[in-house]
Image 1 (cartoon, rainbow, N blue to C red):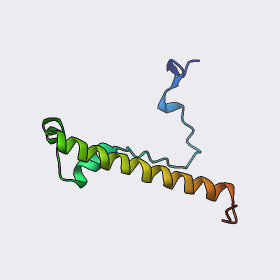
Image 2: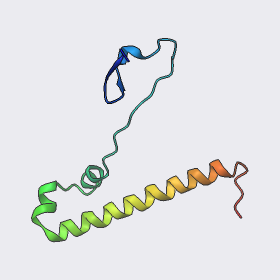
Image 3: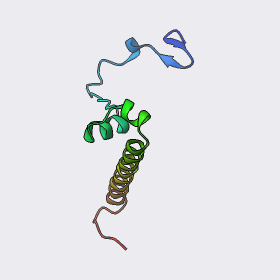
Image 4: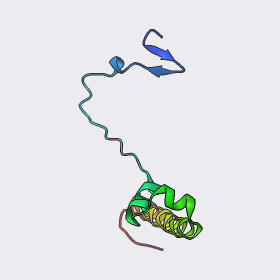
Length: 85
């Protein structure tokens, strides 16, 4: 494998130029999003147990909302007519 760097990784030059698709990678940082929403810093969370519980509750809520959205997307993929049951 002359195009590999080791551990099965390939060099970027090995990418085909005929492939015109573009892939965007979005970093997800739910804790930073929750902290920004509540206008808190990580120092507030570390130093104040009430703020820690508040942020933890919002973080759990965020995870539930994300999961519900994923489930809805999967249901739409599995059932193309959009009918339940």
